[in-house]
Length: 322
Image (cartoon, rainbow, N blue to C red; front, side):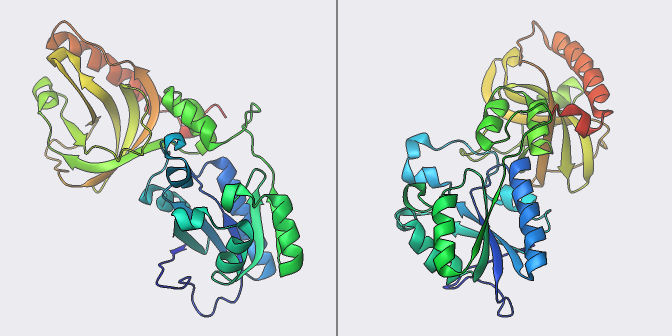
């Protein structure tokens, strides 16, 4: 997949004469989004076109109605990272601003999709809408296609095995409730937090459980509730099973919310300061609690480690109940 850069034009190579396009915010790149992308790639190959996904930054609601804008499942490069694992040919990230928000659906089709991105085929999800007031719904788009010479294909809703609809809104509720098993079932992968390793207070090292501390995530990123989690941490030195604490350290009177991870089986001399890491959250173990003493906390961490190691022995697919 090639992420396009813009300098007055689409950034598409000159030898690309036509594209099959899908448009959306794709927050989370969940199973429904993945289904749309898979259909797009398949259709593009059948038609001899390049497959192109167009998304937006920031989230449109941050411009149209900031008070209603959700915290995001995937921010900045996270969305691009997940989409890069698909078979898409191209990804375009459009800056969403007041001008784009006010553009009628017809103008967006003509000026952006056709003139700029050479669209010949448009594929959208069942609940799709773009342009001013989301007027570009499937019915309107089909009417535009008849006069502009492109076809419109609508992909049906995706549900989990137990019949629940998959949507970014439903996933946000599950993340906010700490229901990571459901999240895995709807994303098809663990929920991730990324950042840079920064110095901490060294309390974990003093307790015999050295941790890495993650830089504060951007404020748009949705975090699960405070608690202790089982995770895998992807680092430049490899992948490690981990226990992750999100929240304060009430045993030590520190209520500052931080994200720190104890990497099980990591070398004692592992130095990750300044490194970019990704924490893949798998399961919530318990709430953050205040213990009567550090030794009581250590006893609990040892119990947590047993539970974490047991969870890490399970395939990720078995953790999701979708």
